[in-house]
Picture (cartoon, rainbow, N blue to C red):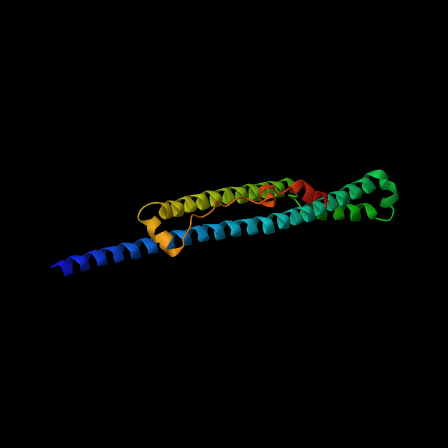
Amino acid sequence: MIAYIILGIVIFVLGTYISQFNKLKRTRNQVENAKSSLDALFIKRNELIPNLVAVLEKYTDFEKEVFEKITALRQSVAGNPKDYQAEGETDKLLKQLMVQVENYPQLKASQQFTTLQFSLNECEEQIAAGRRYLSASITYYNNAVTTFPGNIVAGMTGMQVHEWERATEAQREKVDVKDMFAK
């Protein structure tokens, strides 16, 4: 009878140990997952934003060029139409002007700026959500490591409280889009 009691206690202790060990492993993996997810968001921001700025710069240059061409064509027609009429150039210039206007009826860099602003905002919101998830994961893991009976299992297996993730100075700085346009 005493052997059964001792066997029951051993099975209970072993079961508790295994259960707590697995819980600690799962929570530690959750912290690592949160860190990886946050890194993915930082990578996304650092790749996406400069590319969007480059596209926007190209687009605004293109739009400026089209408007300059249209203005030049208008000015040449308005300047002295008699010089061109003799050679039939007025009709040719007007046709060129109309082609430019028809090809680009809705040139609007402001829409591109709005898209860039939306993308910046979305990236920052995702990073903030990732940081909250990481903090919650660390809290959950640290609670599991420091409370009974997890603290006993953690001590036996060398699991320690996870240090809070701190942003580096570079991470704390916002992406300076103004400087990107200045380049």
